[in-house]
Image: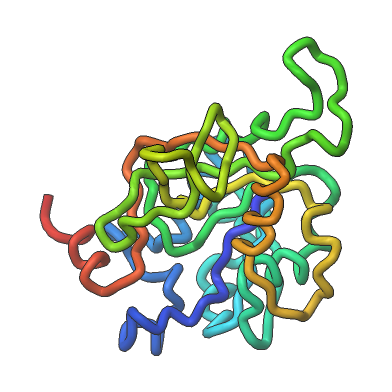
Length: 236
């Protein structure tokens, strides 16, 4: 299985830090955010990693190199201008192959996420081992988290491991963690080099009942502001 880490964002809310350092290279507890992901992926046996970049991308490449220092093989997908998440995947489509892959936001901190679980998240067979028809297979599997204080409304509802856009009355909504498993063909309609948001695709497929998911209960932080970064780096 391959992995893609999103690292192309400008990080406007974290300026002035991101004026000179790409957001995924900002350190949490002595280690760049993106390195936490790389080490956890390698630990799970996922060593073929694609990283997209735009803003200060040369610093990402010079810091991480070919990945051998981590036991990984890293390839890069350079974007002159950030293409959003789905656009970034379409741009890197030739590197991702035809099998399901895991994609991870480079600016989230989840030091204990076990990536070994993503390898079987999208199974082509039913519980009896029979191949599922193409039109009923899940095209994505999302890991949701409890809503952080800065995003109390959440993103999706979760019903029997199925992602829905609108839950039933009093049904809780959760926040997308930035970690998901995807079938590459989801992105075939996006022309490489064009900007496209992943959430648009996800909501479309959720309406077709073709996105599964589960709740992740481990440590997780969206490191989207300087304040949250400082909180993570405060003395324990």
